[in-house]
Image (cartoon, rainbow, N blue to C red; front, side, top):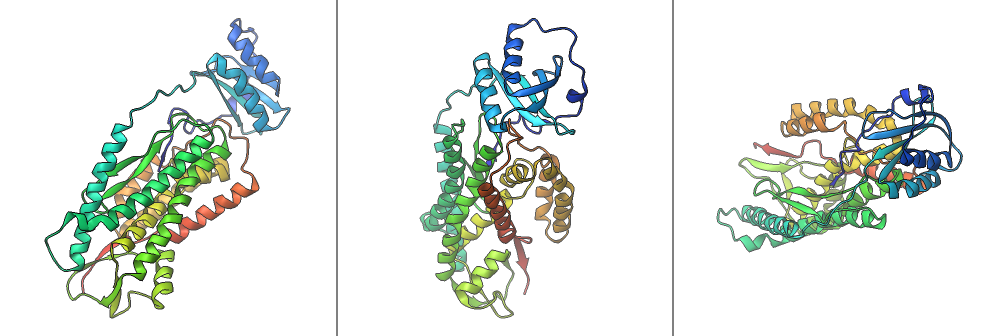
Amino acid sequence: MLDEPSIFADRQVQDSPASVEPSTASPQDETVQSLEAAVKAVLAVETIDYTPPAPISATFTGQLKVGSEEAFDQIDAHFAPLDYQPMLTTNEKGQHVVMAIKGRAHPKPRPWWPNAVLLALTLLSLLYTGAVHQAGLRNETSITLWEGWPYALSMVLILGTHELGHYFAARHHHASVTLPYFIPAPFGFGTLGAFIQLREPMRNNKVLFDVGAAGPLAGFIVALPVLLIGLATSDVQPLPTTDYMLEGDSVLYAGAKVAVFGEILPDDHQDVFINQLAKAGWTGLFITGLNLIPLGQLDGGHIVLTLLGRTARRLYMPLIGLFLVLSLFNSAWLLWTLLLFFLGQVFAVPMDTVTPLDPRRKRLAYLTMAIFVLVFVPNPLQIVQP
């Protein structure tokens, strides 16, 4: 999962800057004059607002004279020595708007030991979860911690690859980012996932997309073969005669069982009793599906925002409604619905929202959304009473 700085999140440009008449009082500050000169070099300025709300020092409205990506790079190069951050966007009239925001991100180095401690604790909780699963396959109550290593290793590989996908994509674009933080949980799946924190706002839609999509795509590439190997080494057995926990089907998971076993499982008589590898693959794909929900600061939210722009916000109410319906059938979704209700409207907006995705990135964006549909599990876990 990708955690974005929230100071610039969801900053919306209203129509007002474009309708404000040029200030009659010329600004005396030399810094503001330098900012204005840098903007006018690439923007045919129509109106200027010298009194916008803090932390914005000035707002310039007009039409770009060069391409948006080139314009932003030129403005940013002049703003950086003055400790200003530009934001390039459009208003409701289609005019280009440049905001001069006082103060740039200057992240300081962070120690690595908290990441190492959390990783060690997560390994222990994953070992315990895997060992419990292995004992359950043998119908035993006693566990041996080290027997959980296939699940623990597979989950760390899947989650680690996901987060390192974010990490290396961010570093490729010279964005400051932390090492992955793993979240241990000695219950359920043995972890609540992992995240990295971006310590400065993303430059444009292309960068935000690359960083947001790299994680789930990388994690998916690892989780899928883990799942297939796990299924191929799991046993098909008669259904239990006592209550048991059944993992839910996604389109991909159901298809994988058909591909491995040649039939739809479970049927009326038997099912596959997944081993630790298959459990890790299923869990990894389930977490990928959660991350790709196209809302807020989830990976899917980053992707859909870069693809659809402000239109992405229209997905909020339909998706909240969908999860409310899912909560009626599985109460586990209720907490997730509440989280999406409060956090799903806050998107991580890049500093340049004008530059669009190129065709290759658009194809990848549609691919990631297709993966979301394939791996999402409507009814993740249920207790079956024979």
